[in-house]
Amino acid sequence: MLGNNVREIKATDYHDIYLLNQDFNPNLHLFSEEKVKKKIQIIIENTFTKDQKNFIKKFAD
Image (tube, rainbow, N blue to C red; front, side, top):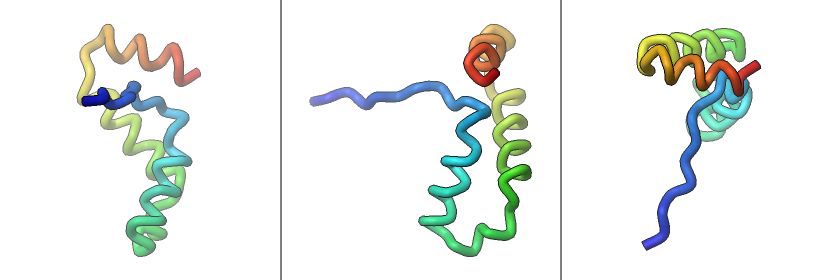
């Protein structure tokens, strides 16, 4: 069985995530790209440990 190719979510992914959500649910147009970006930041801040956050932030900048 082949393994999945997985990487950490980066704050810069917000635009791609927004577009994918538009493809799957066009009613999501109510959410601006800026709001999606803020939601990703909330997920990063509340999901990962301090070391993981620092690791992610290195790649997001």
